[in-house]
Image 1 (cartoon, rainbow over the protein chains, first blue to last red):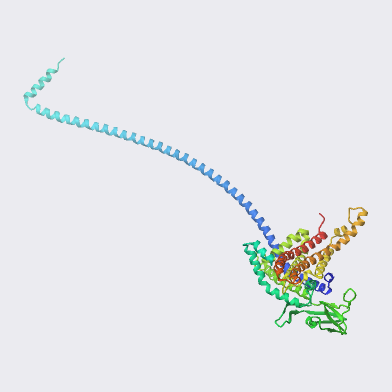
Image 2: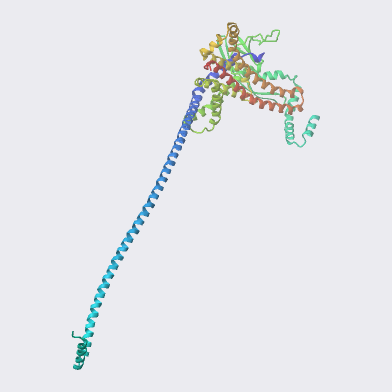
Length: 164
Length: 370
């Protein structure tokens, strides 16, 4: 069988071609390609691990942020409550102070008015006294103008006076 | 013709079938003329034609036709013949043989090309046969660049032309750039062979040592298979369907397997631990023969698959000339297209199987026991 008999020439050339090809390919093709692929795989592995770490970090940060937010919210609520209490207190105090002040002023004003009134009354009394004296003087002068009049008045008064 | 009329009726409005028939009719005149020429010649010998096509040759046929004056014209590329005889090296082009009509002198003897083989003859060019028609003349040491060698070298060049630029891109741009151009063909192949063939069979820490060999063998077989499928000039040689080719590659696997075999592997072959003595007496020879049957199976499998594919395609085409009718041409062409598709698959499959089994054998030899 012709096709089943190996041909030494072809065996020689196949070996030569294959070995040459293997050496060239190993040196110039497989080495850079396989090295690059390995490099890339390592890079991908590292990147995936980094990504995983970053993700975990993110989750942790998110948790921290959430906690901080919660804390801040509580703090804010506390502050607001405190501020409200303080405000009420201040308002209360201010009201009280204002009332006190107002009543003090009222008191003073009342005293003033009283004093003024008393002074005015005293003045009016004086004025009325003086006026009465004036009037009395004038009336007396009018009345006591004539001698008989003076006489009648004296008599009248004297009549009234009982000599006990 | 009746059958075809019926077929058309059966197919009814099916356009595809009509188109197919139309194409076949277009092919008819060419095939017809071929048929006429054959009738003028002696009886068509399909077996001889097939054997000629799957065998080796000293020239690369490009074209052969009969011109208007009825002369047969053969256009072929002569290849260098390299003969070593009695300490003398002779290199000449195969065209010196004039297709076997002329003798080429070497020292005191003459070389004659007879049925695609070079024999040593006397000055008259006599070829002696014995009773079983085998040639008695001696063959010189023949290192000629035959059609298969030329095709094999072409495959090497193709491989270098594809892979080295791609590899240079890797070394230039680094691994972190998206693959481009040849890289996009190279990378899936390399990754497939490395991950799905080699690493699947060989322990990971040892696999890298064998990766270049197995990658090279995979692509060498694959490209030769595909070149063998191309029916015209740069292809058409049956290198990977030649027993010498498969023998050589199987021998490389055999050598590599056995020189890298671990202590454990040899112990399994020659001691077969854990079995009683009578079984050992039985198993050791079997294991020992097994060392050789494994590469032998590799050799035969590739050879038989590729050669068988070529034989089927050639046989289907031969039907036209054997039956001397053009009407069988559509069937022949259709079936050979189907076989071609199958052969294309087989090209990949056989390269895959050869590499897979090689790495399996290497894996058996080097892996730690699980």
